[in-house]
Each structure stands twice: as C-alpha cells, then as structure tokens.
Amino acid sequence: MIHSATFFNPRDFGALGDGASLDTRALQSAIDAAAQTGGGTVFVPAGKYVTGPLFLRDNITLFLDAGATLLGSENTADYPLVTMRWEGVTRETHAPLIGGDGLHHVAVVGRGAIDGRGAIWWQKHRAKTLDAPRPRLISFANSTNVLIEGVTLTNSPAWTINPVRCENVTIDKVTIINPPDSPNTDGINPDSCRNVHIANCHVDVGDDCVTIKSGVEAEAPELRTPCENIAVTNCTMVHGHGGVVIGSEMSGGVRNVVISNCVFVGTDRGIRIKSRRGRGGIIEDIRVTNVIMRDVLCPLTLNLYYHIGARGDKTVSDKNPRPVDEGTPRARHIHLSHITAHDAKIAAGFVYGLPEMPIEDLTLEDVSISMDRSAPAGYADMADDIPQMQASGLFVRNVRGLRLRDVEITNQIGEAFLLENAT
Image (cartoon, rainbow, N blue to C red; front, top):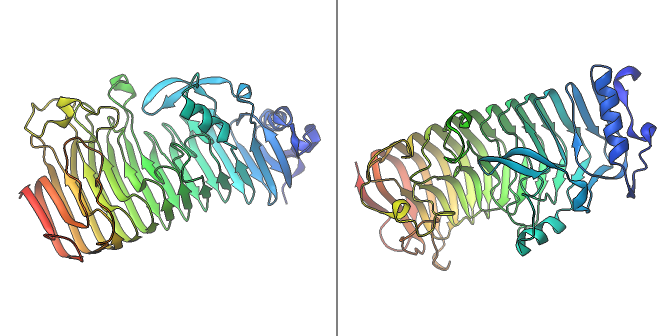
C-alpha cells in the first residue's frame, strides 16, 4: 500500500481525463506537488489525458495505470523550445512529451500508454515547415537512475525514447509501435549514456529499432562522451531500418555493448554499424549472440562509408587511403556468434572498412544465412559508389584479423564469400 503522502492523483488537481480537455496543468501540478514533498508517485488512473510536455522532478515516479493514456497535444504551440542534443548537436528543439534535465531517480512505469499523436509533426517534417526539431516522446538528459517500464508507446513525433548523457538507465517490458512510414521515429536511442539495460521490449517503428549514439564532430570535444556498457537482450524488433544500430553519430565512441537473445523480422538491416571519415570516435568491444532474423535486407552491415548527410563528398567516398587523423573512425573487437537469418534479400553481410584504417578483429562464428533469390536487387547499405546486390554472399573489404568459423551461406547468387584486403 502506497502511503497517501507519496501518492498524487492528477484528478485531485483538476485533470478530467476526457480525451478532449487539455490536462497539462493538472498533470504538471501533481508532479510539482510530489516534488515539494521530496518525491513520490504520480498515479494516473484510467482515462484519456490530453497533454503538452511534462517535466519530471527528482524522485518522481509517473505511474500510468491500465486504461490510462496520455495523448500528446496536437497543437504544436503547446510544445515550448528547450535546449537539448538532437542528432548529435546541442540546439533548440521542441520539448519532449515527458522529459527533464539533471534529474535523479525518475521513472515512467505502468500498464498504461502514451500516444504521441505525431501525425501533425510528420506532416510538418515532410513539408519542411518546422521551426525547430520535432519533440521526442520520452527524453531525459544528464540524469541518473532512470527507469521506463511496462508502458506502451505509440505514434511518437520523432525518436521515441532518447536518454542523453544519462547513467544507469533501465528500459524494460516496453512496447513501441509507430507507423512504418513515419519519418525518423526510432524506438530506443541511448546517446552518450553509461550503464544502459534494454530488455524484454517489442519495437515496431518507422526507423531504427534501437540505436546507440555519441554525438558528431560538430560538437565541442568536451561534449563528445562515449556511449558505453550497454546491454540489449530478449527483445523482438520488426520493421524499421535496423534492428540494433551503432552510429552514425559516434564521435564520442561506443564501447562495451552486448546484444543477445533477440529476434528481428522485416527490418532493413539486422546488426548495423555505420560511420564515416571526419566523424572520428572508436567502436570497440561489441558482442552479438543468439539472434534470429527473417526477411531482412542484410543481416550484418559494418559500413565506414555511410553517406547520409555527406552524399557526394569525395573525402567520405574515396576508396583510396587517406591520411589518418582525429576524424578517422575506428572499429575493432567485434564478435558475432550463434546467428540464424532466413530469406535475406540483398547480401548475407556488407562489411566495408577504410583502407587507411581497416576494421580490426572481426569474428563470425556459428552463423547460418539463407538468401531469397527472388528478392529484387538493392543496396546493402548507404554509401557512394557501391554496386547493387541481389542475394549476394558475404561482402568483406578492408578488414585486419577476420575470423570465420562455422559460417554457412546458402541459396546465394554467385560466390558465398567476397573478400578483398581481408587478412
């Protein structure tokens, strides 16, 4: 039994929960009242609560009971501008529906739902009429001991869950569903975070399901902190551009990542690592094990020629060696094992390191990939001057220390292994 002194019901502060009235003020008042007593649980009972952005405080649990739904306001004027990192750069963005900066011991939990009603934002994005980047659904910055558990999250205006520079983050038993054509509605994107646990989630979105990031080269060097000590386990991921992705914002580096016991269905790529010249940073100590994939375009891509935002840039696309400097990305100590992929479309894998900085220490062990010969040709990943492929084998270029053990590729068109400058 929760003691009444730590239990705050937004209806006691005037929330109607009728699906039409704007309940932002009542919800925020309940949060602030709990904070004034040192913390507590804001318990949202069943109902539909229209709200603009809510700002949590220290020691606050926002508990959405079964049948409770927060509906994001469809009036874009209800979303004030705040300064946060977005796509690797600190800038003004529209405030997330639930967020906060510099917090300790905060949680969003329960069997209720949050519907961002993001269609108005997707429309503005496509029409290029935004005055600032779209709001995320849940985004905490510079916070510690963050828990997001049990809730169902739908129709996010942009990225769905985006902790930035947080420590000790747990995301458990969360369901995320955004339309497959909704732009950049990634599922879970930890950015320059430490000690992140993502488990038992189901993610079905319009972009990458889980993406691990750490800023871009345009940010001041002191702000480029790594994303490290990340565990992703027991998740199902369907549709979306990638199952679990690292990059392309990774100037601060990404290290110590474990991905295990996951199923990917219909994602464009399965495990995807991407960066490019100029971005810098080190991707290292990545382990992937016990993963099943079906109907993915390419089960594994490790691409250091990623060209989105730099298409046509000759420095990025040059396949000849370039001078090594602080902008040269590095990828090393990457190990994948016990992976099965059925009906892959374009290639069994696409691994393209830099000639001046080959990928180091890459292992595939107990990997079985069957290709779908009837799938149309396409590009295994996004890079300038690469050929289209169709049910191709494992393409590997510029790797130092490649180990293949019990790797089986079947039903491919052409050679099973396409290796060049791989030692």
